[in-house]
Length: 448
Ligand code: PMP
Image (cartoon, rainbow, N blue to C red; front, side, top):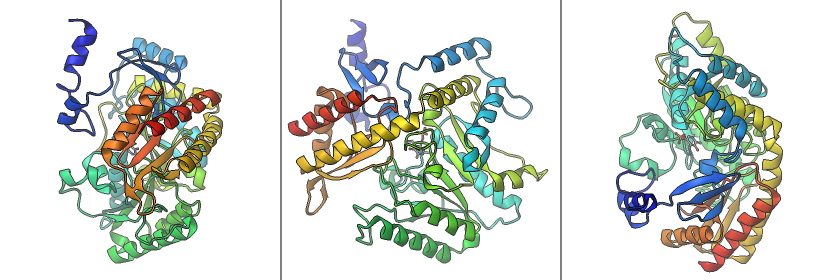
């Protein structure tokens, strides 16, 4: 049996894939990606396509980022692992904490807690939020608030603040004391409000209302994505995040921005917090911190957290991961930080994002199946697919998947998630690559 036949024979059978069912993995075997360069990926049959997904919103610098590969290889040779648990550290992690504290200075964040990925970063922030209040003697503050449609990873804490039933129901009961506020999602919302600014006010009022109902002194933190990502790219009106920050501050509630997608340039700003002009108490990051080349994350911490934890001799952090501050991940992150700033990826994200967004709006004029196009902030865009524009009934899942297939045949991998096509390509896309992605989308839409 050739190696390729061996891989095809076992594809989808012995490995349970995230976010799919074992039966679906057998019935529609996953594409076997065997190579990549620049913004292109190649499958086992030699089919080469633009990666419209950017790995999973993480390969911001593409697949051929040599400085990152070299830094990882050099670190692997020098020190392949050492822990940062009490009593030891490693040089790469120390250097990274220094660089990150400079990088996130405008966000008011100057300490890092390292993790192995996004879900770990969320769990870390939730746990540290509870500990913060306990250290201050305010131990009644244990609850969490978040937005419906928000995505915060898949650990039990993250799933509990998650605002999408698909990631919750099968795993209930979840953490008690988690409450959800309507998201500023103009296309569908309980207020029937399509004006983004007015909707932002209504959602902020709902937040105030929930805080009053729960009692402010029972709430530890509010966690939110500056632009909701996996829930279907929902950018709020620019007034929303500042209103949330003001409400949280006024009520003694910590604000956590979940920037697993939005940190490091994807929105056209270096962080979602900076995009909206807010200063969170904690920021969860992961994904692009290592360009997807190593599982790694960092929770960045602001002045309130620093003061309470660093001034208190009893502030023992009973939390951490074997791979917190992994030297190879830290080396990758250091090289990524240098490379993303050298290439000024915020500028390309903004320029290519505007091109892609305009192109998607033009496709909406032509194809009735596109009910809504959301984006306008860098390279994160969603097309919401409907079977009827009037009723906004979501498109049948099979047809949405057929579109994904047709686009693949036409030269681009796109991701269909629920009723949405999500576009989150690498930030180093050229103008021609972006045109190529739009062409493949158009051909795919014609064929389905
Ligand atoms: N938070 C957000 C906003 C995310 O988008 C994701 C992943 N898509 C996560 C958390 C979880 O990250 P991971 O899959 O690395 O655990």
